[in-house]
Length: 435
Ligand code: UDX
Image: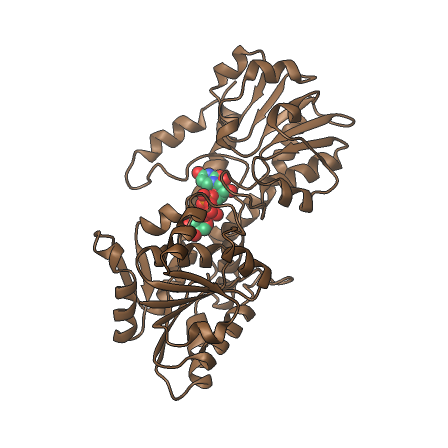
């Protein structure tokens, strides 16, 4: 198959590179000339394990290329994927679809024959209908089918997730579209992976329902963690005890500082808006959104409480700033709310992150930064482990204790066994576990 990918951001680039690795011929298109030049030179605009090698191999073998020229890239292809951004619109929280619609219109104008246009961006229910209206209006002379194919990639594991997904969801409204999509994903279906062919609106909703369900699951265990703290129970044991029930499942039951990232906060908010628009409110998700927002700020208060109730004039070290490990992404990271709460309470903050320093500095220019975990901790009155990067999983806790001005470790990811941290003489505070 010949494929054009419109938008070479996270989803577009990973999907494009993986499709080319399946053996398809793919051109990844982006308006950003600097980005396309960099990609042509083998420089990745994002940090994602394995991506660089994947891109290099497929470029070398002639299956993958990059371009800023949408018109030329769309000519003669079988399918065009739209993977442009859908940020939350300022003010009302609705997903901003202007980039999707603009791309659809431009693609239709550039089409040279029958085409399948695939929405890969996460878009509200009904967007596919609007895209169809736009492409039909632009090109009444051509058969252009519109498909919804939401992605379920996790940052940091995106390539693995793309190549070995639990399922592929495909919202199609015609047999031809179904045939083209089946051909594109044949390498996966041959391996026995389920292809879930459904109506287009259903596919659009599946994506939001999946992310919202996971956000509910995380928020549920976070509240149970608070209850554990109040009652002296252990949330990790509760998670294991309920997770072994196959109906519940053990994944996404790690209590922590609240979910962040580019997807859950945005998608839960968008689902809430859709519920209101259609007068079918998804109240459980509304509640989850507000609990999660409050939780991030509450983590700042948790650190302050661990410091005896005041951090005025003290230095707090934060290990890990990105919303999760193995990414440089700071979007809606809990660290942002935590830093603000600490600064508001009169503390100085020093941060360190293995990959997210550049983005963190741009978003939080007023705090200090250290070049490694131990320099970050040195002289601080407490250290908070905010993101569970591997390099923070085996810290020399004896050294950490010696470097700290006060031996306080607030572990917001429950990385260490309580007894181990205490053995080193640290005052150890974690999430939902008895001291
Ligand atoms: C998520 C979805 O998993 C993916 O399917 C979707 O396509 C995009 O959004 P991602 O945002 O990359 O992926 O990260 P994920 O690993 O799902 O984590 C999201 C947030 O939840 C992070 O802040 C993480 O720390 C938090 N989380 C996750 C928990 O607090 N506890 C958990 O048990 C799992």
